[in-house]
Length: 476
Ligand SMILES: NC(=O)C1=CN([C@@H]2O[C@H](COP(=O)(O)OP(=O)(O)OC[C@H]3O[C@@H](n4cnc5c(N)ncnc54)[C@H](OP(=O)(O)O)[C@@H]3O)[C@@H](O)[C@H]2O)C=CC1
Ligand SMILES: O=C(CO)[C@H](O)[C@H](O)COP(=O)(O)O
Image (cartoon, rainbow, N blue to C red; front, top):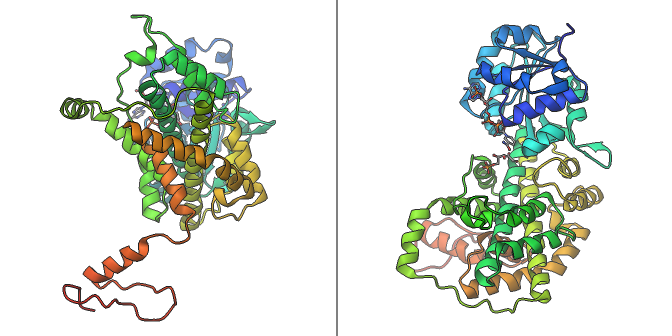
């Protein structure tokens, strides 16, 4: 039997679907899973694709089934399991073989894995994959970090399984070591913000305007035909229309308001903070998930304070709906601008030369944040590759001018009604602060100098870095 072109370890949701995708694109793939039952079941249910799948129950058989130099995709639970799996695999590999971690790894772990493999003759790729189950099966977005040479070995297979937009594969080599996993992390950070902002608009419609789940679903279906067109808006419409088979109620109304998180959103915020890049919408979205988890405390607080929601100040109608749509669009621009700014800084920090137009391009299809909007980001960054921020590009500055008034109106109306809109409000605050040349940190500088003699810079450039603060001030 011909050897497999590639191997894949981990037949969970993502791995099983990726393996079927690889086989469907005409490549022979060897598969292995820690629990062999899963491998057997996978092979037995692979249908016609089974003829290009080599099921293996031992690591030895798995490695022997792949043509050297062997690319091995590891698609398992992120973290320690990846190190354990690599350790089990390594003694069986030969020089030139490539281990590809395709899970949601922390890019710092990826960088450490690259370092550990240095001098071993083995190669490593850190690869972000987005698109969930459906994407893995029919075309994900793939973000690759590693050496150009190792990418060249797997490019044919990866580009063949990736999603396509305008007939271009949504797969690219983005830089060395952790570049691919960093970009996937920020993708997820933006995903958190996108989802949270959609949920906040849903909250205004539900709690401020008394709309039912199906009525709100119809609004999202309508918005999906306009400039908000995206996978997340589309699935929001679908989700809101679904009924619970047990009670007949809207499905969302019987789902607990407590969202989990696996780490990528939090890592986005940590990395942004580490580099001093404000990513307020993403930060708010992560914090909102953490707050959602405090269900019991929130129940106690509601019993203590009561529900203080006042009537929404604007009447429901086409004008308000347009404002809500544009407010969501404005906030979305803020979240993406922040995410791209984090990647730009990381690119400088880690010497990656991350290609912003390429990143926007490979997110246009396949991934969870896919949208028409990403095509507009691609065009904007292609026209102005050196722009310090997305909203400084001509196309996006015009969009901000057009939509920011709606975001202001919606956030202030929500605040007046006692409705929480942390991500929308954080995006708004970022816009207002970012586009104001004279802020208020002059006072912060003065306070720091007063209590800590930290000094300050003067507006006139005169070298007199301490204030005349008088008694109680720190001594310079
Ligand atoms: N689900 C999604 O939408 C997406 C997930 N990801 C990432 O892809 C990766 C896989 O996710 P997913 O397929 O959803 O996860 P699943 O929970 O469906 O599958 C987990 C897989 O990991 C294996 N595994 C767990 N622990 C170990 C271990 N110690 N050693 C070897 N194998 C182990 C499991 O093997 P066993 O069967 O033996 O338990 C199983 O094959 C994760 O990093 C995830 O974050 C990325 C994009 C989207
Ligand atoms: O990577 C993904 C999508 O792009 C995964 O679905 C991931 O699990 C999403 O993150 P979280 O579970 O924290 O919501």
